[in-house]
Image 1 (tube, rainbow, N blue to C red):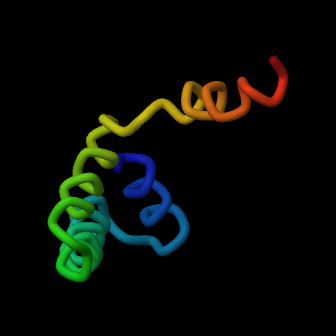
Image 2: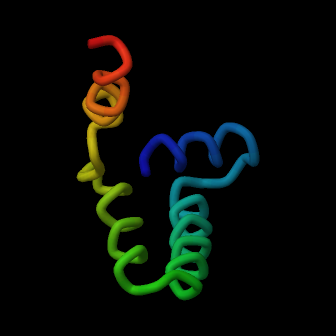
Image 3: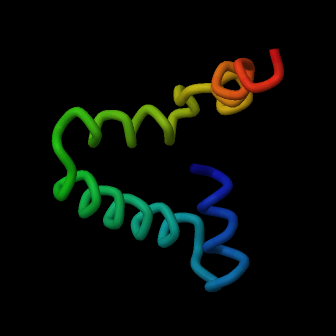
Length: 66
């Protein structure tokens, strides 16, 4: 989430506090529209607890290359 805060600060000129408020507002809106099981995954991804995409790609592509 820190990366997104920095982007908002640089591109839009928001303070750190304003950027965090915007992110929280947008996330609350998105999570309200998602089923509970997906909404909790959004929180996990933002905390850096998401799956390792490199590992997922290796598993998915492993069968193609032997």
